[in-house]
Image (cartoon, rainbow, N blue to C red; front, side, top):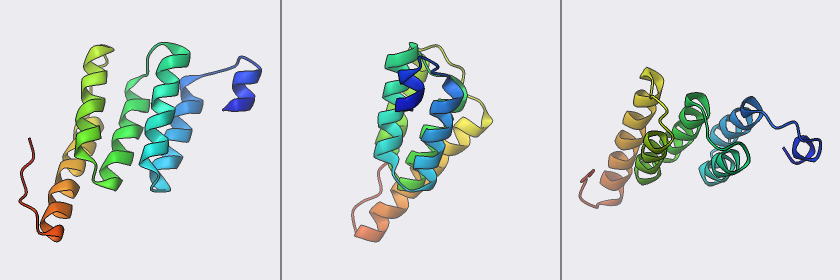
Length: 109
């Protein structure tokens, strides 16, 4: 991404690819940073970039961040698709499973 930025050839597909790779590598915080950079550099993200970030949150069981991403989508007026909702549901299920495994009460707000 830094080389693409240097040549001023930023494209949402580049960001989406990097966000997806971070999610698959179980580095959801890095994926979220790239989503923020995309929004800073290009003004807004598309449904594919948001969904890639939600997939990263689902893999990490980070439902709180998934809720924040949904709020960003609404702010940017990006319509979620079926895959988007599926990723949010997986994030909620993973978060509840993590809470049960740690002995904490499972309450998803």
